[in-house]
Amino acid sequence: MDKFLIKGGKALRGRVAVSGAKNSALPVMAAALLTAEKVTLHNIPKVRDLITMSKLLAFMDARVSVAEVPASDYVIEAPRLNHTEAPYELVKTMRASILTLGPLMARVGVARVSLPGGCAIGARPVDLHLKALEQMGAEIVTSHGYIEARAPKSGRLKGAHIVFEKITVTGTENILMAAAMADGETILENAAREPEVTDLVALLRKMGAQICGDGTATLRIRGVAELHGTEHTVIPDRIEAGTFLVAGAITGGDLTIANCAPEHLGAVIAKLEQAGVAIEIVDKSTIRVRGAKRLVGSDMTTEEYPGFATDMQAQYMALATQAEGTSVISEKIFENRFLHASEMMRMGANISIDGHTAVVHGPARLSGTTVQASDLRASAGLVLAGLVASGETLIERVYHIDRGYEGIVEKLRGVGAEIERIHGTA
Image 1 (cartoon, helix red, strand yellow):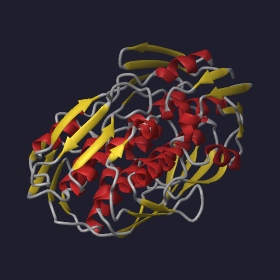
Image 2 (cartoon, rainbow, N blue to C red; image 1 turned 90 degrees about the vertical axis):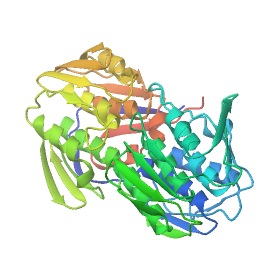
Image 3 (tube, helix red, strand yellow; image 1 turned 30 degrees about the horizontal axis):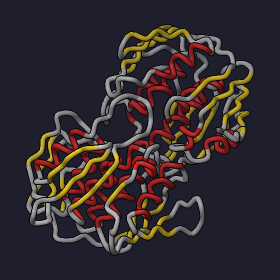
Image 4 (cartoon, helix red, strand yellow; image 1 turned 180 degrees about the vertical axis):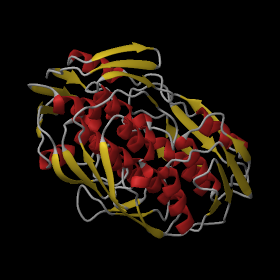
């Protein structure tokens, strides 16, 4: 397996461009299954999860065309779907496979989807997806690790009034796609408001879907008989942008972050400024971050959008290890997302964990050692810690970071980081 070797102590300076949002690209690729016509997608990040999704769509007999490998532009055509299954062998590393459930039910009325895999950050049950589909008339059973779903005898799902017990991003996306071609109107309450959800709505609207309420907690979807092809550009990745904001801040550098969407980063920017970081919104797609001479400890709680994203928690913890005073970090989204804390402690961080709360005392003098990534965002947090640690940090299991960050080594090297990828054979 590949590893990252980092020599810390370099202030990052220069300009870095953000790629497209993985968490937006995955659902819009799945949405291409809703039509027999061509769907052209731009700004797709060149990361492992998107390659896995393209293989999954191809398995279902969709034609996925690219000009290069890896690609940032995809053309997807699904005139027929002869395989309505997402097999475990293809999707065991990627939980976004569940996003094919809604489109398959809407388009052909039958689906067999493996229960999702992905990061080891705790339970992310799909019960809310299934309960909502059952309200729309689907018959669903789960057996031998698979969800088997079938539409009513009419072949089409029915509009329903659905209230999610808990906000779920992928659940919102799945039901949006399922409802787009259902009979009647679906009202979805307590819906996720993430920019990635809004981006999916924008695509579906271009395809002919009738949806209103995006950006709010209540979505109304009036089903149509069919959807058509379109062209769409995926939004920038706010988590990658946030990671580079922290990278500039934690190294005391001066970074200009291009091709981003500052309006999607409000909570992260506010928290970094509270910690003493200087941030300037240069224009509608550019942010400049300059490291503070003195970082100040600041409490943070993860929340659903527009709150502070759980996907930025590990990165913020790395920053907190370098801040003066105490930072209390409360994880409210996932119950098992402090696995990176023990690795940071091995580097010298002063962190204590109590259930869903981590208390970080700083500043700590981190020293390089061998650490292991447990999930996608944990690996980003460890990279940031390695950038300020003395000596060399070796990060193992970096296949996690390859799932969500395009060219992270090349981008960091381009702004002065001493980081290299060591290719493994196992």
